[in-house]
Length: 154
Image 1: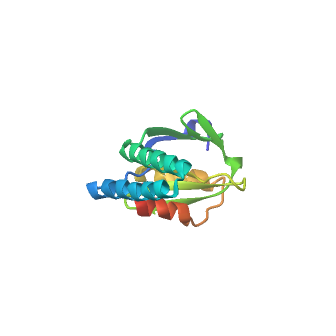
Image 2: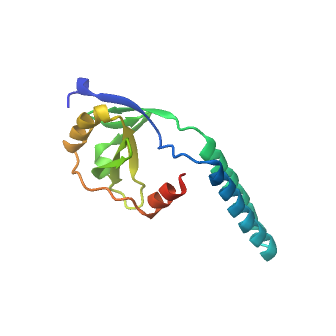
Image 3: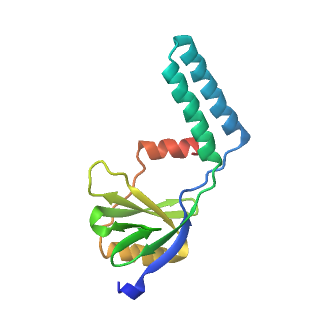
């Protein structure tokens, strides 16, 4: 890819999963049950963690995703001002969920998180070809945390 052949696109930082009012009622109910258990056990630190967790989940669930600007060039993948060099990753894969497409980059470092980058379907072939020229492609499977997040619609 020549430097003039950089591929740019914008995408949301994560998939918004619809939550009805029962989702919020369930979150508060579970929080109240754990809070009651913490009070009964007189575990005040546990109570504080529960309250903070419920508040954080509510704030996160109601916050709309940011629109991020990506550029794929010879240097690597730029996400805003952050550059991910190709050498940081050992492989990539494609994740397809509903009408959303994403590239999942598997890091070389053992405990580093995978990087997930959503992209529009129209630019998909060029993006996959650019990654394929530099990294091997492997099948992407959701890990337990990804499955839990999808199940909880977070």
